[in-house]
Length: 117
Length: 110
Image (cartoon, rainbow over all chains, first blue to last red; front, top):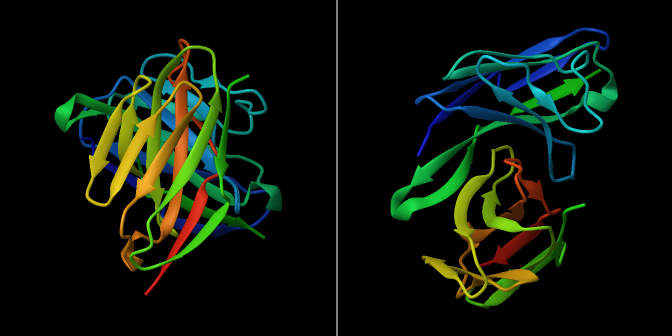
């Protein structure tokens, strides 16, 4: 299965600033997914990033707030723009991959824990 | 709208005390149901994918089953290292995304 490296692992940011999160995969993948996990909550999909096209955003998430880049098949970035304390969450990237026994599962990065003060 | 509900929210067991976690779902056209384990400060770790009613998968002390309305994660003779939050997610219709439940926080006391 794919191995994902996500950076930074955590950051504390001032409100009004922006943070870019990087996601590097050890194999080429068509789709990469960005999720948010708010404190004590489960995961919610922000957007799906395809290489060579604009990201597709879920309801409640907009490109101006969460711009995404996907320059090649192994890398993506998510920017959290003009941050407020409500953006304090864990942000995770994910890719689909085939595993032993032909189970198709989604692998997640270790996450970026963002605190906005 | 696809919905996933997990119960209980939290479960505390003694080491060796077997139990089950529930994941109820309402979706249009289930393509897959996924179980994950999440430790504090880490991303979800893949456990199982189930595709159709009647399917079962096992890994060490964990066994996942699927019906047309729900999935169970059975944990047999758990150990303290099984303590974690267990997440259930579904993929439905033509979508690639996963819809997650709120999770069950499992604590195994020695």
